[in-house]
Length: 104
Image (cartoon, rainbow, N blue to C red; front, side, top):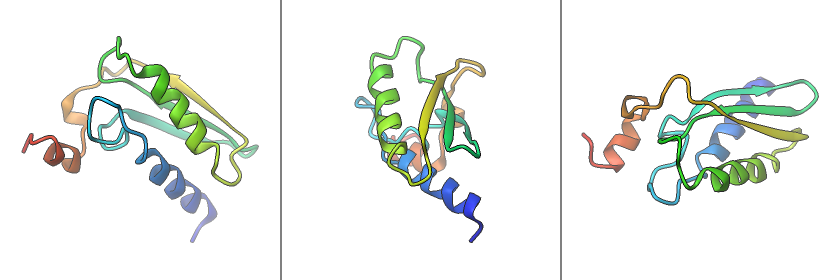
């Protein structure tokens, strides 16, 4: 398998272990991850949003992401950028997330 795709798969797998404490669905399937950019020097840049700008779990989520993605071989540091454009909506959720939350 292509090394880049393998690394991307590891990142997605790890992001799927991060949960908002108030929602029983991982942040990846919730559609909170907007961009994943792995640079050649091992710096990983993540653009993500929150379900609400005043989300009380924001600091917890950012730290959990940094810690978990930092364990991936080849990742030297993790930058998590909170962005609010485009604004998150329930339409961004995966089908799995909607099923889990009883929205289908």
